[in-house]
Amino acid sequence: MDDIRIPEPLGLDARVAPGSTAASDQAATAVLDPDPMVPRRYVITHVRQDTRDTFTLLLDPTDDQAPIAFKAGQFTMLHAFGVGEVPISISGDPSDPAPLEHTIRNVGAVTRALVEAAPGTEVGVRGPFGTSWDVDDARGHDVVFVTGGIGLAPLRPAILDVLHHRDDYGKVLLLYGSRTPDDILYGHEMHRWGDLNDVNVQMTVDNAPYGYKGKVGFVTELVARAGFNPRNAFAFVCGPEVMMRSAASALNGRGVPKHKIRLSMERSMKCGVGLCGHCQLRELFVCVDGPVLDFARLEPLMNVREL
Image 1 (tube, rainbow, N blue to C red):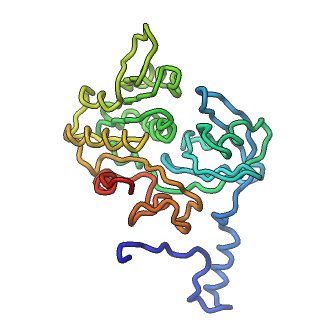
Image 2: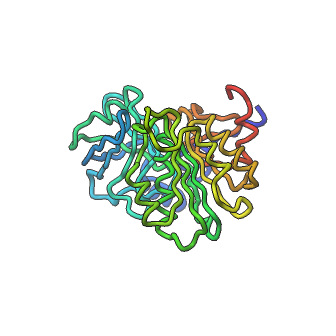
Image 3: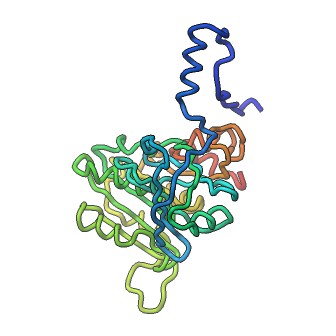
């Protein structure tokens, strides 16, 4: 139990004397600051089907408040009223948070309710929560994005952030893998990034029909042949955990330092603020310590079976 960190409780500091000026100031702050456990009402303005089981939702607030500001890599808790809520990474542009954008795979009751909702449906949004990709740290370096399937959605805000300041970075590579050609996410957008923004986009699929002319194989195989300077590179990785572990090891094997390899972890997050413990990864609470963490910190944890 010595390694278990108990998060600080939310709410007013009990050590402040009632009736004091400090107590009044804290009470005013508590009124003004939104409760992270109370969802804000948003309305779905558009639903776009991206693949057979993946959809992108555009959301606008129903109140007069400004849209949620977020950093690339953060997530929200999306609430389908009467069904439940799920953690979903924000996939929109951090420089333009309206509308709020989420790309969702239909895998359960809540996600099904969200992707099947008609425009005009109200949903709840809590957040944003978690750590960010901090792509500013990579300025002046080569940047390598490695991702698989819907893992591109949490990386999309980081990619857009880099492209908004393209001259501040060296080579930019996007190594993307999907199960089949039909499962490729944001295909047209990836081609546009390559054509207009000097991004080296390489795609591969696990399985392909007869006559398919693209690459076939695992995305981790692209790392060995990708053209970048590993000693002067930052890497951002998102996808299934086994894929991230392999990709991070391959990147480090090429010479990218572990502290410059960042991964986005997925766990069963329920509260988003480090109280419920559903997302605990040994000493870490993924919802507050992550989801973005560097490989130096994660490698010892990812090498433990069933942790």
